[in-house]
Length: 431
Ligand SMILES: Nc1ncnc2c1ncn2[C@@H]1O[C@H](COP(=O)(O)OP(=O)(O)O)[C@@H](O)[C@H]1O
Ligand SMILES: Cc1ncc(COP(=O)(O)OP(=O)(O)O)c(N)n1
Image (cartoon, rainbow, N blue to C red):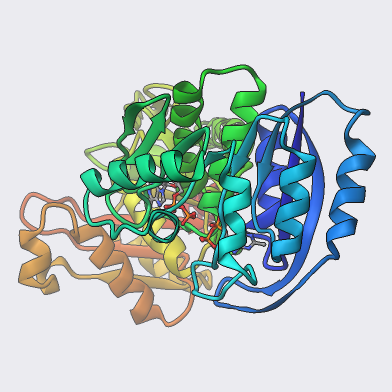
């Protein structure tokens, strides 16, 4: 199904037409991109924008209308009052989701005449954030009740088909007013980059409506889609990731395969590994590029003279190694894998002799407040060892504490590198 997208270009690639195209494509529909304006933008600021002439909008829309079966339209940044008028006229008979973009989240205006947005509110499913809802309704919004009231005012005074006041700037609950009824969509705060959430939300909503979903279900699905796009956003983009679902699944598949193969390699030299398996077992963890971590369920244990993985490779199968790896990746994102061995002074010496960067932390130095907090020790330990090394450590060890077994962690940029490091470490030195 075709979805018409009327939006501006964000040169930072986080919001605007690029986020819309990715969203509609990721949801399996065909985007028809109609450009309103070019912005000069990065995640920190918008230094300006150039709106296209209004006739260029009319001609772009007319070029595709009639050739495609357009099931819905999403309208985002317009740039000028002239563009707003043309877009309103050329799309008035379509199911239209209108994100009334007034300014970027960094505060710069993205339309010359805010009043001109009203022409597009009429007949649209409008998706204002809190400041936009305040501007359109004239009501200050401090609570859920204010969100409901402003949605009702916008629908009744500006003749919107429906209004969704988004709570990203307030309480994370989105409020829909439709056919005289209110619907609420509560959400939890998701950690990640949020630049582009409004664009992804409105284009996901248009895509779900194009599929024929009823409005409340489409809103629910769009909201959950955006939560994923925040959760799996990437540091290099500093914005939401509309391709998250595909990427997550592809990365999961590859990571599972990579770790499975690496564990098989380890088992091949299981007799050498056996004496170095800690009492609690060895585990082997691998992070995907989106920060999810796989490990061996039930760990790798001693088995006769060799070793054996107890269960399959699963997500979050080792809390301990997952936290170690994620902390290490805050400093060195290229590190993706880690394995733990029983501490031995000889192994540490050998690692140093082999030229590995070896660092350590001492749990007796752990600050009281970290000790008191439920789960901070590992993070504190890795950070301490990383800072002590002053460069990327290959091996980190600690000598244990009451009830805590001393341990060596071997890190690597992928699972194979970790296996190679363990193999070299456990091989007898040539005489
Ligand atoms: N940190 C967050 N965690 C979860 N959902 C969020 C977060 N920030 C925004 N959202 C959701 O993203 C969508 C867009 O909301 P919002 O950020 O308010 O819009 P805008 O980008 O137009 O300012 C809404 O569904 C909102 O609830
Ligand atoms: C070209 C362009 N269009 C829209 C926006 C605003 O994007 P939005 O999704 O509302 O996200 P925030 O920037 O508000 O986080 C934009 N910046 N540029």
